[in-house]
Image (cartoon, rainbow, N blue to C red):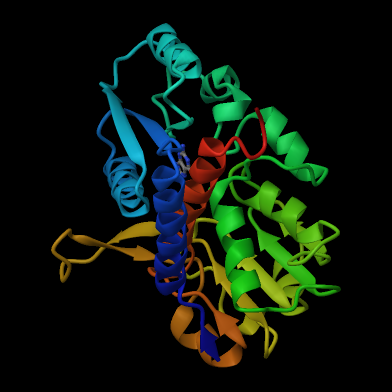
Length: 293
Ligand code: GUN
């Protein structure tokens, strides 16, 4: 069994990005600028956004954090989105999700100029990704593709089971794994809360990508020996031994599954660090106007 080290891979990629940014700036080019909108004080969102700002520093980007309280109105938020759309200094921006219930996430996502949508959530980017055109690809699936690429894991013709069908992970992951290129070329099955024979589907898989949000859901009896296991789960569970009072728990019962498989991502330190790294790659592409003028 080989552990897939997302933390080390992400550090490597951030170093590559920082070198490219230094080169751009030394030739008189513009330093990429990412803005993030954060609404409220959700613990998870605060941590994610803080880490995004830190990653910007590591990559040599400029970053701007714009905060609103929970009671911000939808129209106030939409006018901030509009301002960022029109701000020539901002290359890309994100609105951290989830948003409070009184705000339509879909409306906000669709208000973002797709050319600055470095999260890859706008329908134009989602559509372009699904037909294999250049675009911003959402961070978690793209981070997983990068791990498969860097670890040279074979995907062509393999049976890949994806657990979960969210717009952010499951659906784009399925699209990417079935693309006619590598990593990709896989035979993809998407399982979700209404799937029958979920255990059997998993047991037949060469690659399992677990993004179902249920801690320890994938157990040893669901895994074929030699399978590749990618764990996207990051559920916070109480842990008094930690300073924060919680730890992150994956969707895979690591201790019993790890000895069975060929490759596995740990939680934390697997997919998580790659997610922010993908956002940095998208921001660099935005700065370079790589996909859209
Ligand atoms: N919330 C959880 N993941 C993400 C992400 O990738 N982008 C944004 N904007 N919000 C999230």
